[in-house]
Amino acid sequence: MNAATPITPSVRQSRVRPSRRTADRMLRLACTLATVLGAVVLGSILLMLIVEGVRGLSPTLLTHPTPGPGTEGGGIANAILGSLVLTTIGIVVATPIGVMAGTFLAEYGRTSKLADVIRFLNDILLSAPSILIGLFVYTLMVRPMGTYSGWAGGVALAIIATPVIVRTTEDMLRLVPGTLREAGAALGAPPSTVIRSVTWRAASSGIVTGIILALARIAGETAPLLFTALNNNSWFNADLMGGVANLPVMIYQFALSPYPNWQQLAWAGALLITLAILALSVVARVVIKPQRAR
Image (cartoon, rainbow, N blue to C red; front, side, top):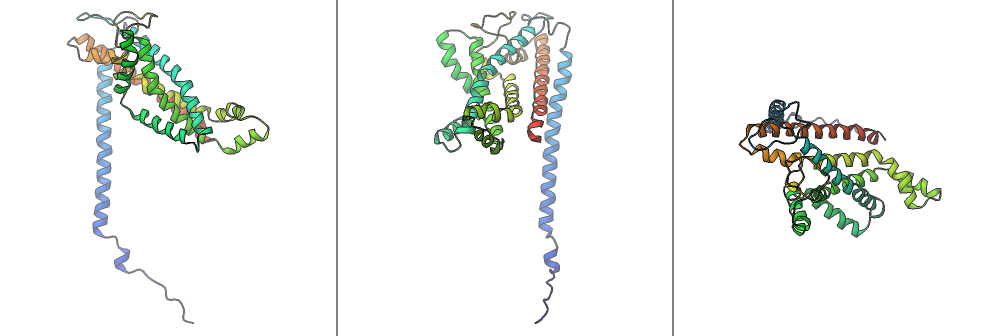
């Protein structure tokens, strides 16, 4: 029997074609340029925001309400407090709805057609322009009530936050090993008890992360508040049946004004919102680390 003859690749096959090498270099260059361009644009925006925002900082920024047209001084305390109230309403309304809906999709709706429809609608709502949600709430609440209100603004923010919580809750619950559910069922626990005591506890950090991300999402929304809560330059009060001062709309209105003092306050407000969203994103990453380690 003849010995096997080793097959050696030809020189032509072993060499990389010049056209492929050129294409690879061009692709690397394009990716590098795109990365550098994105970093330069983002860095320029952040640099301008920091420089202009720091100029707008003052001792009265966090203690005084927004000033009147053409006046000096003042602050944005009422806008900050109003934003906190509106985001709190939104996240308080969205959290139970989002967590329960995500739990249904992950635990009961894996093979359900109804669950597929809910997922599809949730994905549409997740990517829907926020201005459409603002118009919807305007038609639903503002027009019948005859006035802008903080409640309408909170509902609009809740609609925006809900799909984020639904998606995150479902994804985190699907990461929980099925053996944990089987162990709970083997002990005779009903499904509701298994969900409360086992599944939710195992996915708690991921669910909290979804809530934080939803909070960061609605913290800087402007379009829905233009049609719902609008704005109010007076000091904040507990009556939410009228316009409520808030940072996003204040920034929008003050930035377009001809008054230098208002423009500086708009930059300062934009800097504060950016820092708040950055802090929420960092907290979300810290919270989700234990979930990934599991």
